[in-house]
Length: 507
Image (tube, rainbow, N blue to C red; front, side, top):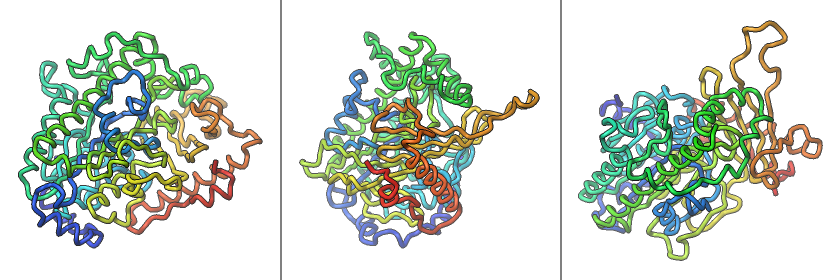
């Protein structure tokens, strides 16, 4: 059930209309529909659990993603894109609002966007500027969805099902693909630009299914004659050095379900890759349909993900944690208006999920609201900026029963510091001294020399200065983002490049 149309109109009236560029609104509402005469159309695709290196264009020699690779060849590939919270509900809310989870307050699957948050979401600003807005697929935030705030709504709550009409029915990837084509063909007849959000379930597992990964039937044999190489990053044995809260976590349980044997590992990774292939074919269908209706030359296409996933690294499966496999995700941006010299280029700048909201608005000629905590990437489409971002904050505090330890982390280009702020449920069934762990577990990695995060340098005297500085950064950042909850003022990042330079943390 979504918000009613009347409720949406009421809450939209409180949005920051003054932040819209008047000339952009006029163009959107009055310009004729032929390409180049109005603001660009936008197709924003968001995958679930798609880690950064599960693409051919990111160097994966096994996976088959020809259409996503082509999207990168025609546009810009962002090599260092990250999520600030590696769980779907929180990360998707961060995409929608350009806010850290500590500010927007969405940590679980039940909490919906508030009316004020819907009024601040990227699609609401675009709609106010004259855009037709559509949503297809997994909404991922709350049980009550703001369906009334869209012109075209095909979203669903929760995790969804790969075969929503039963085992013999169409696969979800086919359904989403058809809905996207339907929207684009309809939008071609409209007199205004559009923003279509396509939110995949893939390549997320089908929870409770023994097979876990359920690709479309035509994808089942895609990797039939392929042997997936063993984990080349942190091996499964790395679990032995991690705290008991991780060794007994949900992530370790899922490792047993998916990767405990070689046969399970092969089946799981092949299924994961095959589900990504379904997203890849949707990219091809969208581009083909845009050409068919004459909108290809004025439609920006963006592909990213809510977070990554451990596929056996560190002896873990799933997301939630600050390890690179969980937080690093793909970002491909194709803008047909770019100069030929800018296409097929790559960017090293560190970018975040919270950056997409202001990016979408700037591409449409709009200003982001003051509550946005991300930075627009529009300028990076034209040239790289090594000073774009030097540090960012990662948090995860899912309020579950204790099987997913909470954490906060700081990452720079070279360093990553993590403080595990929560552990598995306390041991209360035994007498003292068998009680809860005494001190939070900490990790410190030198990513320049240890990119797979296998050598914890915490309390090593040679990095005492870096450890002290990063620990202080975490405290300041956490207090800052949580202190902004419920406020509407402009947020200032608490740690700046000058701080890193002062503390010897720049490479």
